[in-house]
Image (cartoon, rainbow, N blue to C red; front, side, top):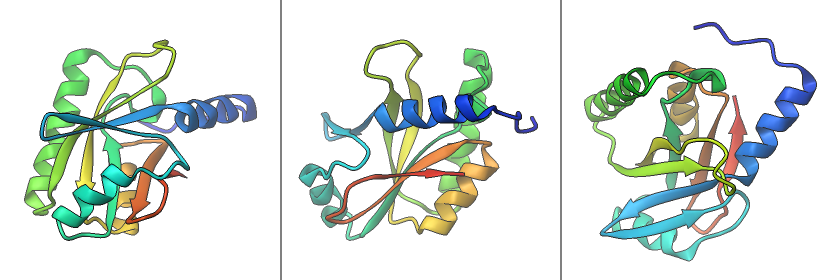
Length: 145
């Protein structure tokens, strides 16, 4: 799939949607809710437990924000999980969703101990417009690809 040519308004709207989204990480039967630019101390505990200082939240769903069928998204998600396992990266289940429930939640992965450039490469590989990246004791950041 080739990257669509978004108008400036479409880019602004997408950026705002990603910025306003809620990102949930599932850990030990707990839901850790993340927001862009808002530090979450619970997340730091997870990083400390895994002895790492960086993380990324990435989805393989809906490349370039173009809706795919449930079956296509599931297959893409499986490919992402296989890649992470092949690269021996630890990850937790996660989801990205909008606060108003306008769009369907997107299954994601919370990757522990990944370097920013590697996370960006995975985001590009799965044709995403953006990823969420973070470091220990710092708020999550939206990285536009």
